[in-house]
Length: 417
Image (cartoon, rainbow, N blue to C red):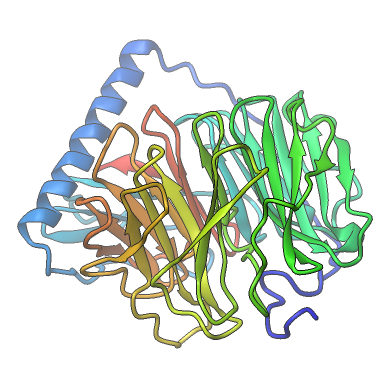
């Protein structure tokens, strides 16, 4: 039985007529030397931010300027204080979110960072956007006829090839694929089972990927592709542990199912007596399970997002997604590939749905949620709030292209300050 009160993550799909705001996509002419300067400045900014957090781990500064209701202003964090982007105040040394004008009020829980210039966002009312100029302009590349769907995950291989997942019961769960930057889409999968409800997907490489459904007949269902998302098949569930009563995955950030390397995948769960993380080392055929020390025991609580920087080191975030509800121990860490999880010594202070390692860092990561962004500089042992803007998901590319997305069309890129 689908539990009530979960409409924001997996309940009914609201059918709304979408009125897209299309904008022309401009090409950037920045040369290699310009890119190097930007990346160098961003790396220095992140380094300065990390040093500040280490020097004053207990300090949480108040914002000088907060994003407005439309999400059109930004905040910067770094040094001892905040500074508002575009507010006339002097920016501190560090890095911060720079909000981009997407031209829509859709809520984006799906996000794929290809680079600092290219990113994809997928969200409510069947909306898919793509930028190729660092967020200065966005092209509405939503699949035709998808206005009644809720996209909650997007996996992009580059600026032209991407796969998006729509959630929902029965046929509302679908997978679409494009190879031409969203000019055309192919429906690659439509769920025929009314008992299945797909939440997240992940790709190991350009060919092999998985998508997960909430438990069907007592076990999570895994969908697999070996051709880049062109075709999908349901994997046998013999190697899947039994689900707890009421257990499910949360379609909150596209990070309930993640992978690293050619074969390892992890699945985050909640809604039951214990929050758990499942691990597969063979692309979803067999799984082991471990308890996670994140609030559980309620349909609104559990692990919402995962991030692994290699096969051993991972981060988990979550809590209670209901506004105003406390979320103690909202983050946890593993150093053994998910066999065991420990609570953060100073956890994220509130519910968080998305988490990402900063590129080329063994210790620095960001976690996001409706009430703010947190930073860790010690691989998840302690977290410090650095921004109060609302985001649902975060993703980073190898060239320091870190992006965040959330409600009211909010998409931002990490910038040096």
